[in-house]
Image (cartoon, rainbow, N blue to C red):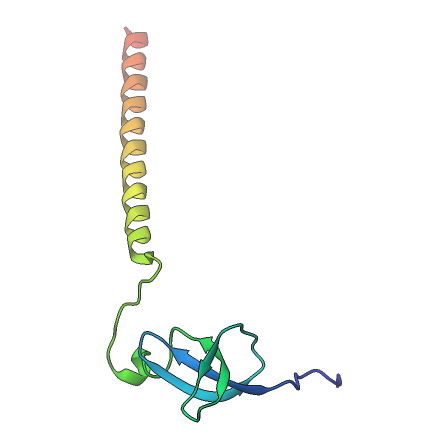
Length: 109
């Protein structure tokens, strides 16, 4: 087994979920430049997390849509663009078939 595989520089940090107003003190090796003054009067490094037990639907029992990056809007736009491309290709195919049939009917005469 490899030696010195796990980190050893654990230090106290504050994990904070800004959307839920929830924070807790724990130990971590994660690096951050932000700090926060904790309830005990000491200053600790701050790590912001955007989903925690205070905001996750599994723990809260409420389903909420967190769309901070516009994912739903982008999906709807892609869906609409794909439908428009599909319709354009279908009309182009109909025109091509109609021209081919017209050409064939002229050649038969």
